[in-house]
Length: 221
Image (cartoon, rainbow, N blue to C red; front, side, top):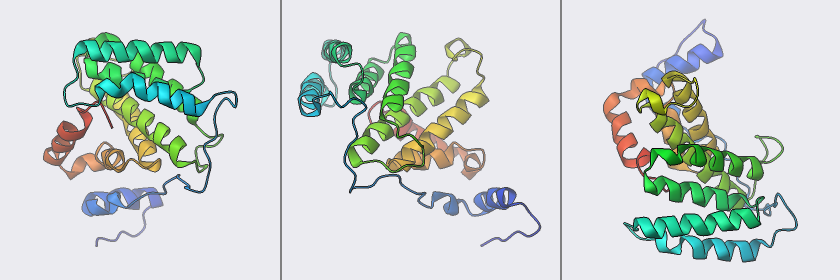
């Protein structure tokens, strides 16, 4: 193991990550506590009924290659669910994932808004607070989907970039979202967080491309 002296903690960590890349794959603190109960953002919500409606809306998508009509029907059903219950975060998540299946650049803004809304509704008061398994699953899915969107946008044509953000800024935002998804239990996102940070990129373009191909291109977590 390489060791470094007379360096700041941050510089030492950076260099150690470069020369010992496996150290970057150490599992960070996971913010999931199985003993906690799900805290709804709106106590008036009937979570059991909403979950059943949500499952019914996306059931047709649980196949290797759903048709465009099936996807659009699911999006419509989820939109109706969101309209009736705008404080239910999981529906935004699933609509974003369904829209990603369409592969249309016109849906980029909606996917961004949906994932951001799911994160806002499901997040605890502090980002260091532990959450229940269900809440963590919602947050992990939303952060992962938003990270994929940001990463793809960073590597797309310039006219698809978000606002005035450049490629480097979009990559940084994606990296932070991958890391947050990892904290909420998505191990693949955690690994992407390593490979998309400035030090992890030095692990090699071949490894980076393999992960990108197998993980980022898949719309569902």
